[in-house]
Length: 290
Image (cartoon, rainbow, N blue to C red):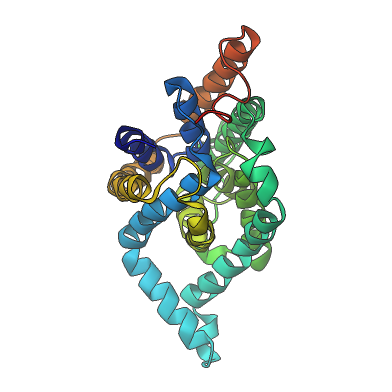
């Protein structure tokens, strides 16, 4: 991997990690359209350490409060009633599905799941799912002539059941094209949470899963065409870009819908299918290069 490839891929990772459009799919597609070798699941996982570092810094006050309350809950029964302590436990509960499936499906994640036909399908299908979920949320908050405004849930109302369902939605992002934030936010909207609550919990829930995945894949860097120095460079760049994206995204969802992302996902998926159909792109492009 060249320094220029690392620069472009690090930029793409930072721009797309927290938007509901799938960073892993965009890393794969960027390499395909540029004629580069597939950066692979290991490169994706390690560069995500950079984007999750941005989450740790951006939400540092919330995270410090949650971690502090969680530790107190280990020995103080009274502290277990605090919302932050419960949220700490629910992040752990919600991380179980992706941890189990990530280890179980490791070979598929690094192989068959990177087929461009599957990526195109998940881009379209999960895009439609996100659109439906967003429409339901908008209808609840705006009401209508024959429909009263329905109050949506905040994170204070998060339960073990909901935390586990959030986690199951997040686990779907093991397939490139699904999008970690897109899947968890969609799940949260279907369960009746506000856009802000679903997005905030999505970011918090990703921290243990992404950091664990990145550390687990560290041993894979240096094998094949992906070397250490460009990977570190891409990781640092992804952190810088992701921090700005988080700040923008949290403001965006407070007043706007997810429909621009839905349209983008569907159009991109259709484009991939069209390119494959005319023979311009192979479903396995880049997998045997280098």
